[in-house]
Image 1 (cartoon, rainbow, N blue to C red):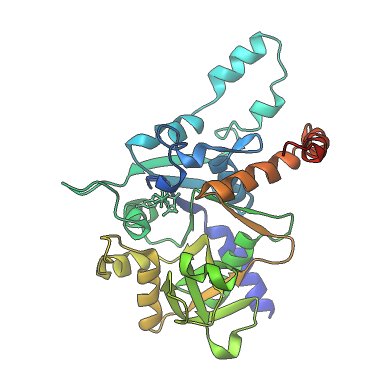
Image 2 (cartoon, protein in one colour; image 1 turned 180 degrees about the vertical axis):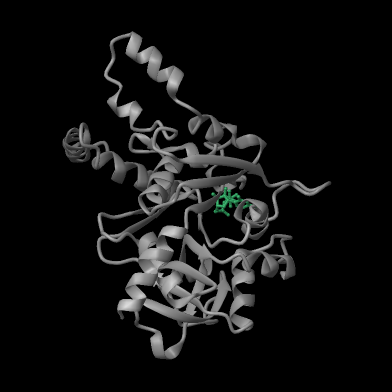
Length: 318
Ligand code: UTP
């Protein structure tokens, strides 16, 4: 027991690299995303990608690689050095505390950018597995976190989901640890679904016997879905290289994870706990809800918005 705790504190501190894939086309959010990356849409007063980066930093991440594309340069600009802007505001006598909080250089955070290439003659990037493959030289042989840039995990819990995942990964010496949440039965075919081993099915942290990308109804009883957060060892790169493209040409990360399980490697899921919520903004319905939830949490204007919504919904023309 003591050994586990000591290892997790020590090993948890050694995972300081994260990869955020942001090279997808965001077609489900068109026309909103024709010129604006979906990861740059606001949730409350911060862009979605900014919430993701803060979540990673809170879990001990210090070096972040964005796997990006030519249409996503706004993300690179957003995390660029803030010092000129700060200076201009200060010269104007403005309060810079809010903006200064996001001076990442001061906080010791490094950002790196690479691009996922669209294959010659192709029209779209080849999926999340292909995006993670582009991170291989950044990662080297360390364990690393992957966080999808279009999903926020929100909660006040300490330790956070990501911290629990990193601890579990180190304690169990797993090859892969996946953040997980339960979805409704009719939603199963929209997600990567995780199948726990029978003897661990109800555990908060369970070993997996299978991972199935968007299963058809009836293929599995499991409703445990991937939640856009992963911890990997570097062996995932060899598995990605061995994956055959799906019918649509994409290389799914879930297929590479499945190969780890087939090779007898430990792959685990850590569930979201009470009070933690996943916001996936991939379609307009989910995006609208996410924006409203975060705007309602705003310390300055949240209560005002609540009053406005009550008043607005009480009117006949809604
Ligand atoms: P999604 O599949 O949800 O995003 O990928 P998408 O492809 O942009 O969305 P649609 O289906 O066209 O609407 C989840 C995350 O992985 C990134 C996306 O940018 C998103 O943040 N991604 C996806 C890549 O980096 N590369 C890819 O080839 C696909």
